[in-house]
Length: 319
Image (cartoon, rainbow, N blue to C red; front, side, top):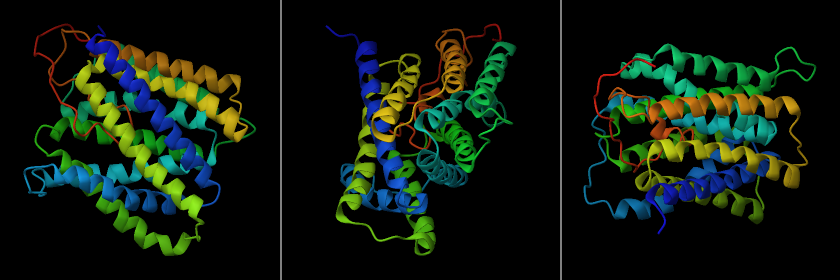
């Protein structure tokens, strides 16, 4: 019989595979359309799917209990989606993923001012190591130079980390419908205002691609929710690094992108530092306010329905 952790790991691998295919479709569409247009239509086409989920909700109230934090989270989700879609459209997938993999490390840093965490020297060392890995990928001063796509990936990592930490702070108080619907409404409104400036007519097959983006986002999210319900976060979260394998495969097959040695080296450094944080999170003797790695699987798409459980408040040495 398959154990709960093994089942959760399998669901997480499937979820990140769906997200990777979703990102590949975004990259393909990005060759023809501005990121604003892709975000707008993917959100618009996602509304019918979300409404089907809302019909099952018994509580009809959509008023947020923590409006300030909900508004900040909504803005962070918008920034994450737009910047991530732009990054996928303009730089190789492997480079975009390598930079976005820094999200869990940024979560650790943000947990201090927002959650009141006490982060010990070992985890700060892991954050520093992860930032070194990001610099290896970015290679400031190299001939190729840094582009807006690299900056967008950094913004996606930072904004995604903010989404995750706020999810940890208010996740037990706000309904899933509120956390899911408000960012969609805000994205539709904001991107709708910008759309006339960048809109390009779409053939039917490209409109179908927009629908695939919406379906992939929802499908991946549901798989991640199931994964977090089945297994411990320390088992599920590291499965995110499987996306680098997908990035290499899809980049080579679909976009003729072969990652160079420095990108692979930087990715390995970031993954090693992130895994160290995950392993420290999995120890039983930690504070009840550990960083929200539950939501670190996907910037802007935190597992809305996943249980947010605090670790036992057992005093222990700072790590």
